[in-house]
Image (tube, rainbow, N blue to C red; front, side):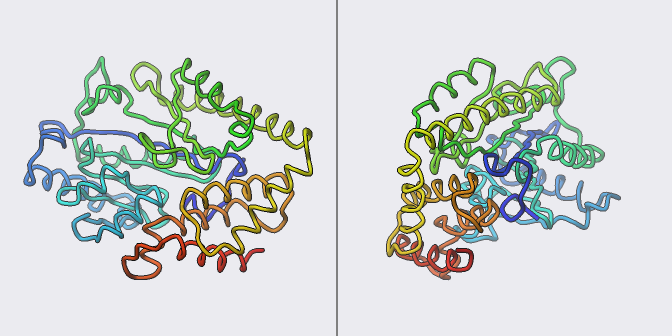
Length: 341
């Protein structure tokens, strides 16, 4: 199953691990410059490379042309991290291949011809890369990539040239945020070629104390070195987060626990919840569950609740467009929490 409804190693602090690689097809105009005919040819080539392969994966993927989806359906895929916000905004030329477990998605005609990714729950970058590398090899059996012996894989944006890899871990860091140490951590990782983005990647806000830690450098280090660098940095961030949580607990345990239980009380009784307030309160519940203050709730349950209460999921849940999502979100939170609390 997907990162949403499975637990993984260190899932209290690390929500998911993702590997994404960018590829372009030789002798085809890059996606931002391609017309509809060229874009469709690219989509057909990528689709056929999977569907017509001799691999068992050929029966594991569904092909979706984004123009066949409604706005809500496209944004549901964004909220599940199966496609990027950028791909969602290109429905006329974009497509995606998604495997049955939703661990792999292959985005077609985003900024590059191919942006494929593998997402696993918890701390599992190596496993995500092992699986994605196999898919990459299958596509390359029938599709020639833009590749330079010195530069590596050629991409639309120079910052992706080389391996074309972005490896990232989605981390929950409420302790560092509460102790005002988060900016120091983010400045430190930037000095070693890493960066932090929000819930939906570049340009998005870090709501609910969730940050995506990823590499900035794709040219020079190998894929294995990129993964190793992130693993080292994430282990250090986790140690700092643990110390921050312990400091908060020791400074005033009663206040610390009161904040967590108040968050649970609001979520189980509120009649209106904005997305920002919901994510903030859910962060407190996630913290309380991870520290053993609240029993009977695990990270998988909270991941499912987080995704179910995003805007497009709420619109899909009620089956129509509705402007009063705050009251619908509050009702859904109450109903979901009754099942687990």
